[in-house]
Length: 364
Length: 99
Image 1 (cartoon, rainbow over the protein chains, first blue to last red):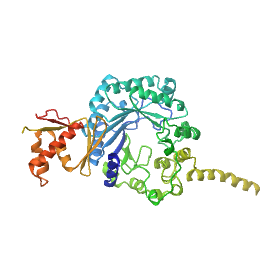
Image 2: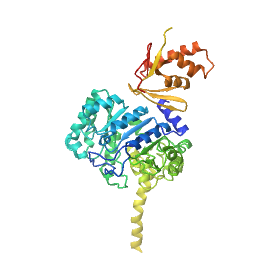
Image 3: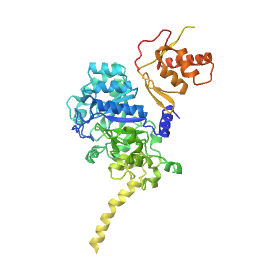
Image 4: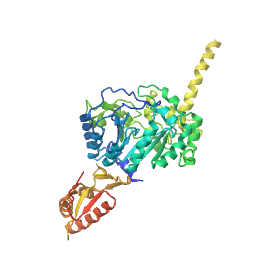
């Protein structure tokens, strides 16, 4: 077991939220076609409020802190907040499009020692990247920002979200990352909007392309292990929790709302009304999320993929039931192994039966 | 024997978890876990207090250990932490203490 795994286990045993994702703003200078956020400011926390939240998170034992958005550099107080977070000794990870990182900003960031800076790059070709962000020259500016950060020795991670629009460009983005001295990570998941609008999912890559991505050794380190059929289910697997959401991780919105995860918009409390630890420890919805084990999932507990599935309870919640299957993860399990999931079979049967009933009605 | 001064380095991230100090090195993102005694020494490393005094206050006052033996162990510890870039060691007081 690695020290990182030990740390996670210890935090779980102690009920400590070891990791928090804090969106400082939903405002953004880009308008990415797949973004799940409403970019209007509906009353984000001010500097003093964010600092108070940071004090509470540090006292609660949070070690890994992500500052994200929206675009974090849209906030005029961003450096004050980064400096404050670092004075509280958080392991700070920043997510930005790097568009606004000039020489001065890079100098200041370097002096504050964030753990890493993650930048989304969709393509190495401006005509593709800028068409996704809807911001002219965004690729050029993001690359310039990354170069400035790398020149100062900061760790940069290029995140490559795969969609139909940019699927063919991952190799180019990976090469670009190598050239810039940045790490590269790829993600084929498109998240529905927090409002529940699921239209952006159509931008995601289809089953055939997903299957090819999962079998591509350039993107997946151990294809045969990753795509292996699921092992037989044992009782221990049914006692496992879905993920760290609500257990050792949670999400805080710019308005002070606390959720189990970025992808899990189940309201559990608001930091303008309650203290963080009160929400973390005593919120009924948070404790409900925490109580769920694989055996409590009516469909997934019967599925052969239950032990290896990446099932996201937040995506399932957005489909209407946090104990239900997540279609996107059913699709991933199928694309990986070629074996349909219980959720997938159920959905296919449900889709088939109304037509059957209509036929019966016609005969009558 | 000349005095040793130790100071925490501001570049790192740190948090106490279940009585142990978790430290992430900014140099290479290596994670360290310090036990209770080492955590107490690390927390008291203000750059101005001699290590012998820190050991006396943070270790000898709590644990039944001979001061000389404790100091020897502490010296080994701080040199190891310094080698990993999470602590600064000097034979002079370290004025610049960012954390």
